[in-house]
Amino acid sequence: MSRTPPRRYWLTGASSGIGAALAESILATGAHLAVSSRQVAALKVLSQRYPGQVLVVPGDLTNSQTVREIGEQIAEDWGSLDTVILNAGTCEYVDARQFDSSIVEHVVRTNLLASAYCIEAALPLLRKGTAPHLVGMASSVTYLPLPRAEAYGASKAGLRYLFESLRIDLADEGIEVTVISPGFVETPLTARNDFPMPLSWPVDKAARHIFAKLKDRPLEIAFPALFMAALWPLSKLPTGLQLAIGKRMVRKPPPQRDPV
Ligand SMILES: NC(=O)c1ccc[n+]([C@@H]2O[C@H](COP(=O)([O-])OP(=O)(O)OC[C@H]3O[C@@H](n4cnc5c(N)ncnc54)[C@H](OP(=O)(O)O)[C@@H]3O)[C@@H](O)[C@H]2O)c1
Image 1: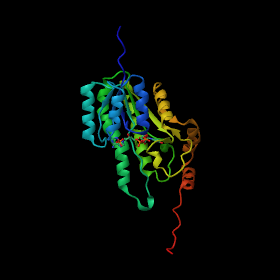
Image 2 (image 1 turned 180 degrees about the vertical axis):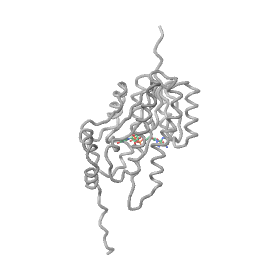
Image 3 (image 1 turned 90 degrees about the horizontal axis):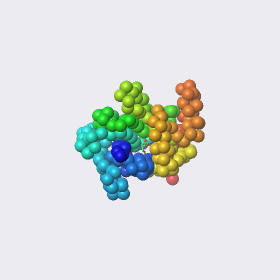
Image 4 (image 1 turned 135 degrees about the horizontal axis):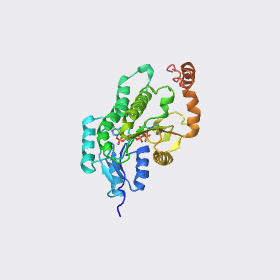
């Protein structure tokens, strides 16, 4: 009797946070998983814990040649991919008083351009896969302009458009596209945040939620529900009202004290 072959995934940003937790959920099903990030140690630990299931394809995804080589490596080892989850990303905040375009450049390069490189590498492999599924990690930040989020928000808004447009163009080929929009999830990335994170979720809970939802291939996975219920109506407000809300969130710089 022939057995269904294990599903083949490629997950970026698997060394930390949501990606690392998602890798556990995927591997627990017996699926095969190609993992990418710059730090190799965490990926190697995964491959030791799940022998025969993990393909370690590390590298800096902002380098298009590196991503091309990762694609070639996966093609050589597996020949195809069934699900690709482009989760790798970063966040840096902007100080508008000293606007630094290099922050925008770095964040857009990591969150948007690297995803485009990965899509270029992934599509030929997905076309040879079974019930192919392409998944992008956006953010709830795209629902509302927030202070200091110029770089991060722009990168994720761009990513959202990239995936939603691609969804239309890939529909005929049967490649389904899902966009994930988390609220706050407790990871090393958000541990750096110096502001309260309402309704934040532990990373394992978030990963289990994402993985369970992915099975139904929704257009969007937005969570936590309560957070979205508050955010969604705000995203529909006229721009002037959104500006008023955003201004209330701006933190004033500490008052300058005269030296004593
Ligand atoms: N946490 C949240 O509240 C939240 C909310 C909305 C959206 N998100 C999104 O979720 C994704 C994961 O975030 P996280 O919170 O889990 O952050 P994290 O713990 O910092 O993980 C980020 C992952 O991306 C990888 N990465 C970053 N730059 C890379 C590069 N140039 N090349 C290859 N890999 C790179 C990192 O690995 P290396 O450092 O080893 O390269 C790491 O594995 C991001 O896209 C983030 O924007 C997070």
